[in-house]
Structure formats: C-alpha cells, structure tokens
View 1: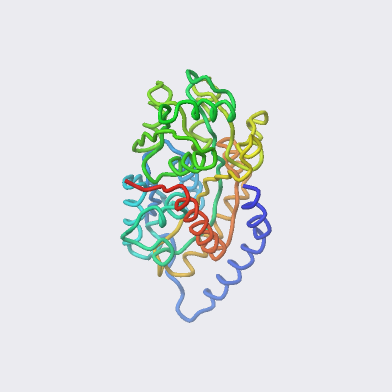
View 2 (view 1 turned 120 degrees about the horizontal axis):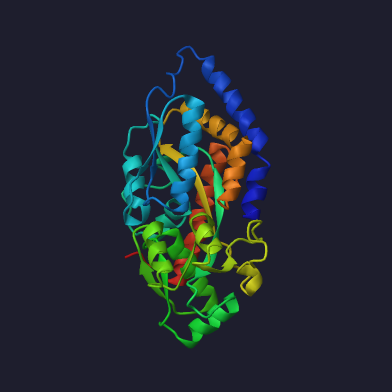
Length: 333
C-alpha cells in the first residue's frame, strides 16, 4: 500500500492537467467528438456480489451516475476466476459504454495463473484509472485456537494438510493471498474454493472452513461482530480502523505484502477522448470528501493515476505475480 501511494500520490495534480490539456486539443479538432455518455454505461464486475470489488464498483457507479446525469449500471458476470467477465468486455464495442472493473486478480496474477486466456490483459484493454486499493486481512473462525500469525503457523505446521482455508474461487485474489502466505510460512493448508466472496464468508462464519485472507471491506462487519477473529493484515502498515492489529510483515514475514487494487478499463481502441473524460471525472470523484470517507469506512485507500500510469502499473504487477505463482507452484483448476 505504501509503495502504491508513493508511486501514485505525486501524480494526482498532474493527471488532471494532462487530461485537461488533451481534452482541449480534442475540442479544437475539426471534427468534434460525439457527446459521452449519451446512453447507459455498464460497469462489469467479474465476480459475484458481496465482495470488495463489487462494493467499490457500486460506489463508482453511483457517483458517475450523479456526475453524468446518465445511469451507470454495475453488472455482475462471475465465472472462471473473473475471466468470463473480462473476456466479455474485451470483446465488447470499444465505445466506452461497457467497462470492466479490473483488480489485482484479473489484471495482476490472472495472466500468469491461466495458461491460455481468450484475451490479452494488456493489449486488449485501455486502462482508465487506478482508483483505490484495499489491504487484505487474515481472519480465522473463532473455533480455531490461534490468535496470532505465530500461533497459526505453529498449529498448521503441527497438523500438515489438516487445516483448510476458504477462497472466493480458484485463481481469485484470496486464493493467491493464502498461497503466498503458505509459501513464506512453509505450511500445508488445504484450499476450499467458492464461487464468490459472499458464499465463502457464509461457510467461514458457520465453521465449515477455518480461515481466509481477503479484502477488509466484506470482513470488517463480521470482525466487529465477533463472528470472525482477525489475526493480521496483509499491508505494510497497520490499518487506521484496526490499529492494534499487526501486519503479517511485522509478525515475522517481512516479504509479505498483498494489496487488492482496483480500477476500470475499457476495451482497446476506445476513443482517447472518452478515456480522458472518464479519467478526469473519476479523479474529481476521488477528491470528494464523502467518497474518501466511504472508502475509508470500507478499509480502502483512494489512489488516482493517469491512464498511462495505470497501464504501467498493471504490467509491473503481472511481472511480480508471475514470480510468486512460479515459486509457489500455484495452478488454476
């Protein structure tokens, strides 16, 4: 999270300047760009409702609807670890009216996790903005006798293959977050995949599974109610909303940092002026106090970037996660 903030934080003002300058050039062209948006815009979330991706996407949809006076619909298209929804948008008309809400799973480790994808995560998309990031949290069912990372690792080491963890699906962010944890802690914990964060949490709270690592937003209310026990967070620094909760890094594994980031992308060849219009409007959205407060409530940190910076960041994340996937021997089923 700290690295992302340092990389992106310096560019908030420059991104607005670049967008405004380019928009001025477009306006001065002989053939004016068609008005955007002139109809309903669909923001596709490639996962089931209830997870961090869905929560933040709906916040974006609400605020863009208010800003544009045109409806922005959030459409859930789960399946294939997010690949179904991403492929749908990749093959949609490049006009700005069908967007994908990308995140670390689909545009970070997905390209390395799946051998053959029907799309290219870099070439087939036009990044719009790196919108926000959410730290992950390691939680366990209260029946598990572990209250720290050290205790959990000791328990798992004493019972190899006996503990299990829930993920929101093979190839999901929660899947990779725990597999990275297993790699660093040298533990054997069995994966139990679900179809989405919502179903995953239902069984976790019922004690059908024992632990998970996923984004803070869907976990926070269950942690606060006592239905799940927090162990640590996956970011480099502690969270303001859970200041006493240590990080996994400070719990003995300094290399562990897993942050779930989010940002919308359009199909490749979407008009440049449309991309810049959306980028500028979303940059303005990020400056609104109520949006920043809502993100903070959800455990998310606002970011912001130019389209080019978001594209470069995606390529760096693909390279980083390819190494983790290789070293951990992770395979998508």
